[in-house]
Image (cartoon, rainbow, N blue to C red; front, side):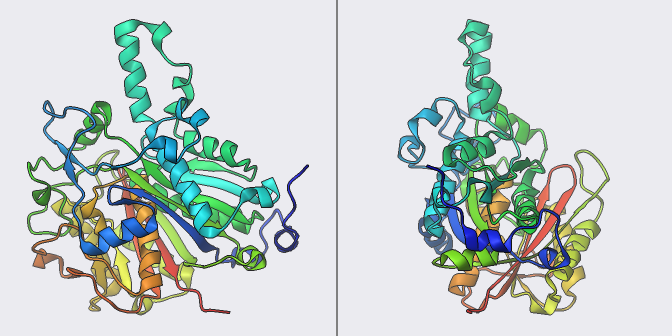
Length: 432
């Protein structure tokens, strides 16, 4: 028997070409799912973040003794059998397990069962930065040591950037327009922007966000090639965004899935809660070098301004900036200059909780949006992660302890290796 059609939502979402009214739609986030070094699930993650628990630690998933960096943010206590159907485990990578687990948590949080809706009413768009490192590492080692017959037939799909999108779609029978966005650390924001486009074109619900798991010898080598990874021996000395002792970032794994809905569809099914709306977005590119960012942060500032304009708000309306917080002195200085350029003399609160868990690539920016929405929900801004002594040269109001203030508008920044800049505005939704 076919699944019932969500007729109320379908009546609202009939156009395949966006009209002027459709392009004004601001989708809402009705569900959050988090898999992070600081917790499995939204509430574990959020409580750990507000307590300022440093979850970067010595790498345990392999012996890092031969590498200059030996610290990372690992997801602990994750048993794939508890979160992912067994038939998927053998054919997918750890990053896909994280993405599928986060998606199940997000769907449960939103009380959204795709089987209750037309299969074409739900889509999947995830950001990805590195693909299936763990699976690929294992199978390449088998190739080198045992020959090609020892390589799993699933190698061809498990490493692929689109694997999590595809497997999530298959698991839940989702037939809406789906895809993957590859823009490194900006991917989580860019996936949400694509989700907004998909909704404006007629699909009522999209799973969006991203997750990563690059903590393998190969993955760590790729990180180290950037020259921006901290080689600190102690976690407290490692990834320190905007700190006077900032010395690079430390990698991490995990991410977040968000259930994004057309507001009419969410209302028609009686969504139990709405965390906020995706109010504005913009992206730019430095167009300077394949590896090095531009000499200044002007293009990040441009993205921020355009995102605010897209949301119909001014810098004075913003209650907090969730910064990219790269943890390298030059990149932090660029972002600080961009924030000052946009906000002028106004001391807007700035935070970057990712110092607690490491940089999760596309998963990190998705997690930043989830964190911003939790700030809106609870009226509290988490502190910059692992910040001891803010560098006064940045001229920012860096949040050093959880700050309880009303939060209605949050601006989230993310930058990707190679020059990607993205900014996204989330905003509280007034009760009907």
